[in-house]
Length: 168
Image (cartoon, rainbow, N blue to C red):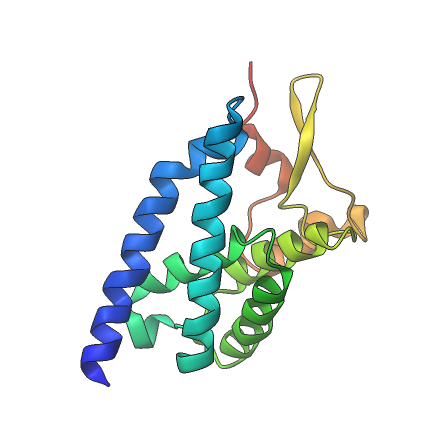
């Protein structure tokens, strides 16, 4: 089992590296690049599904901080595999309740899954587009409480968050 977990740790980290190297393709004008991104995230999503079947949610206690974050990133990018995203969300919720996963990361994954389901997000972490040079979030359930809800899970206020991305 220890060897399996060590191998899993390396595999998750490698998957995150591949994700980071390939993410620029996601919004490429080249359809072949977009397809390469979709194939990579689908392969990773499938593998994360297998990992969750075998190990449950890969927490930092199990695989270390970096590999646990990699698992979250893979779930976050499994946009065309809602079953994988929902499962990750459920397992991550249990891990957060047990104090072994990040409420902040869970909030991002919850918003991502809600938006992918065509529903309103909670925390305003998913950006729909840019209007007058400023990022605009996908619709939120309670826009007037968004910053309060963000603060509760350790996410900076929306304006501070988007200031990082705003084109001047």
